Amino acid sequence: MFRIQRSFLTTIVLVLQACGGGSGGNSVTNPSTTTSDPIPVLHSSFENKNAAVPVALTQLPRLSSLPGFATSLALLTGTVDSVPASLAVADFQRNGSYSAFVIASNGIDQARAFFVGYSANGVWSELSELFKTTLDWGACVRPEQSAVADLNGDGRPDIYVACSGDYGVGAHSDPQYVYLSQPDGKYVKYTTLTIATPNVTMDSNSVAIADINNDGCKDVITTDNGNLQILMATSCNGTYALSGPAANAGRKPVTGGALLPTNIRSVFLVPRRDPLRYDLLVGGNGIQGFPMKWYRNNNGTGYFDPTGPSQYRTYALTYGDSNNRYDYLESDAGYIYVRNGSTQDLVGLFKIQLPNDGSSTSIVSLIPPPLTASQTAASRTTSPAPCRP
Image 1 (cartoon, rainbow, N blue to C red):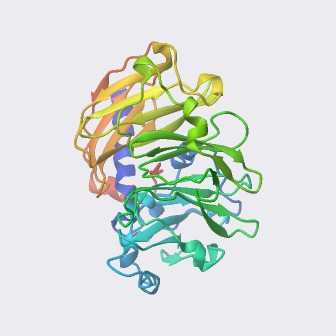
Image 2: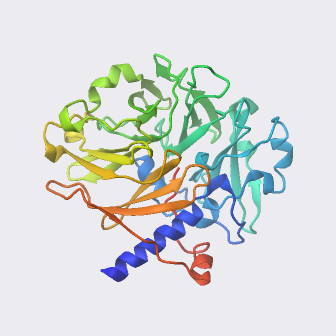
Image 3: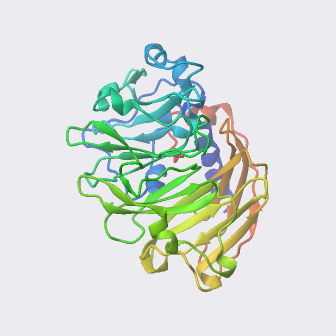
């Protein structure tokens, strides 16, 4: 068991080294795996994130360091570069190879979305042809997380970007951005000002996407100023529409010990197969530790209001400060890794029991095994990379 656990932890460390997105890192020479058939889009953002993604694409360097991107970045004023948290990876070209989505921003008032390809000879290139028009390059200036799912039901990967409030807006609340694939394979930008009813602006930190009520459409769980918000899909047949948080407030946990943590920073919808449902995992602010709670989706109905302790679990994880964020992976147990919110560097690793009936809520702190030079090199060629979308 120790050998299995050590091997899995090594894999996590290799993954984390590759999860820097637009944050920097070494460029690589190995190409993405290419086949003739499009890579399928899985059922939720969690599953798409944890799919076997080539490490090469999760080591996307900063766009400012790549030849061929200077002209596009120069269209924005100020100090502009790619934002690590905005990285998403999928087969956006539908050619059987992975490509990347990332947002470049000056952090104040200007931003632009990019699709980036990685060729067989190891060259990164801008895929501006994937946008329908230049207007669809638009993006929020403070992206916090990008999630991949098939939102409009066409079998292609779409992108939802959780955006925190714009420094230039007094209310610190912004539209959330959505990039939907079209029949011609191009992408059109929408925001929650147009696809949500009533229109929605938020100061968001995180997003998770899955069909939580088994109606065939992908629903959105996100945050607004530290509060959990649920947006249910009302249309997903070629278009995509959402009902706003007010209409779905009754789906949130509101009773007794099941009350939500304060100042939520991260949300996950994790698949469970017996019965088929997506459970909700949320985590709070680093200043208060990371009070985490796991809520069972009541019979796959999309309501998270447990009536008894067997329906939820509370994990009291105290670590770091408010700049830290955590992510969640599963193997034989649940593994929480804490990373620095600015650099994306690994700063902590913990193990929890999967939240089944009667399971323990204990947390085990783990020390990642050191990597040898050969292991680090191997991570660039062989390791799957379930990176934060």
